[in-house]
Image: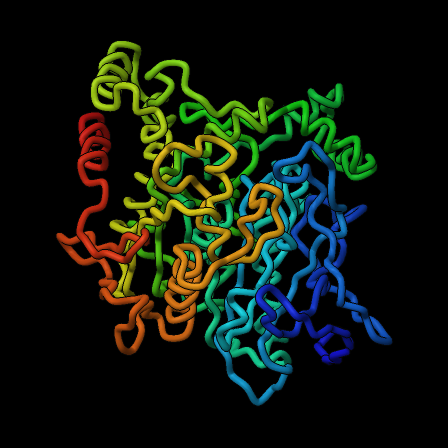
Length: 522
């Protein structure tokens, strides 16, 4: 039994003997805000109510009410604003360890911090925090009436509230509140980038790693799902006040069934319903973001910290996974005009769009997996790195993950014979994951590709969290190349594959193609 007293009360954690007998301490399901239920539903999170006695934090808390990733099964509850803290050594306030703050992915509609076990990170002397936040309609609904205080982005504001919790409490676990690295993958990577851009997060973190997701990806900015939700509920809109009251009175099951009927439009030429809402500036409610991310980056008005951006070499395999597992989610291309991003398609007539689609068809031919990966992820990620370089003096690093190993979870589901790493295939090399897709591959042989990749990733990520530089003090057998930050005229990167290798301008011919497309219509 491990007792820690935080600002809100006493909590009980536990000693854990993890994967490969790694020993560490864990505190699960710590509330960082009030349960967002009743009149708090859809609103920004409220400070947690202090408790008396000792709160048991030895078991996982609830994820946001959602469908379980990879299974057609409902999990979670509205009482989901909880986080987990893990530390290798017994909590001691005199320690000043780097803090790593993980934001899970799942397209802003699914996922949970509970899936990501800390065992690999616990080989290093850091404090790891993983969080749950509101998903789907519960996290991303908004109303026009400012008096209702539901401008949107409650899910992102949950993340900000959790970061504030870290600032107030992490010293109790031996963490340094002045050395916090936020990181996440997919929607978690996009969240990480949005936090870099948001004034609400100023001063709450000091470094950032955005994996396979960023604010410039086409699926990042969303429509307000209100109209679709009301139609799905057969509710005749009267006014914002009555509508909010009605939605706050419904059982969560009813709202989620209506959300499920809406589906999730992830078409490249459309706009989805769950994600960042650009809020109207308000004097009564703190805004998360009110402008398009690209404008903020170009102006240089954001939280300037060292950043790592990165992606996998076969990101587009995720589309095959989605088509197999989530037929209700449209994520496929029927013709090349559907591959024209929305920000181009909404500005031009059929003649220009036809010419662009012919160019795409001629360039990609039948390489649909590369096309999917480039338009959904890679182009936006590289553009983010390049644009930040213009307005920040902090180092910006770029990587490509190409490991083709036994822990590539998503490729195992889709096309195991396709070379490279799918979107999200890097996750099982950072976290121990109890996944049925791993089957017997959770056995990690010493000096195997899987073993080396885990050790490389953990060292690079924790080096960066410690100093802002991912390189070791001295090159070693695992990390024997220097990872250079990008610079003007040199998009330096490392490829994390069977070995580490350095280079310039990854996938340059394909990125040049998209730059040419955008330049031709600018």
